[in-house]
Length: 214
Image 1 (cartoon, rainbow, N blue to C red):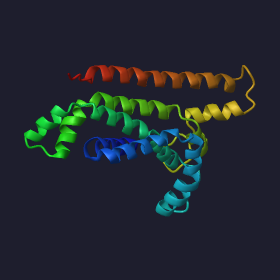
Image 2: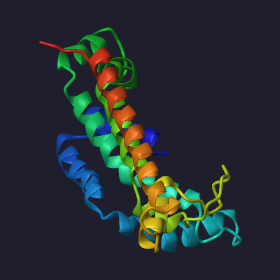
Image 3: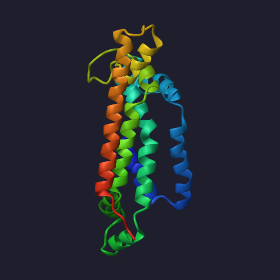
C-alpha cells in the first residue's frame, strides 16, 4: 500500500507540483515520520477498524486485526518512500528532461520513462529502507494486531508478529534460563539477520544501478 502511494507522491512533488506547493507539502509529508508509533496504533484501533473497516466490511470485523495494523504501517513508512524517492528524482539532471521534451514526450512519459529509471537506485533504496523499518516495528503490530499467535494469511484476523512476541514475553514473568526467556534472543537475532539482509541488498542495488551525472 505504501509503495504505489509513495511513488505517486514522489512523482507529483518532483515533476508536477509548483515549487511553492512542494515547499508546503513535503514538510507536511515528512512530519508523518515524527508521529509516535503508539499514536498510529490507537488510531488504527479507534478510526481505521471502527470507522472504516467495519462500515465497509461488516460489523463482525474484530477490533484487533492485521489489516488495520498493515494500513498504519503503510502510513508510517510513506514519508520514507516518498521523501527519498523525491530527492532521487529531483537530483536527475534537467538536461535529460529537456531532451525528452524535445523528442515530443509528454510530462507523464518523461516522469515514468526518463526520471524514474534514472533515479531507480534511490527509489529501490527507499523501498528497502522502508521494509527494514516495518520489520522492526513493535507498537503498532503489538497493539493493533492483537498479539494472538495465529498463523494465517487472512487479513481480518488477529495475529502476532516477531516484535510483538518479544514485547509480550518481555513484559511477562519469563525466568532467566527458561525457553521463553531464551526465545527472545532467538527472535531478536532473526530480526537482526533480516534487517541486515535488507541493508546489504539496498547497498548492492544502489551500487549497481547508481547513475552519476556531471
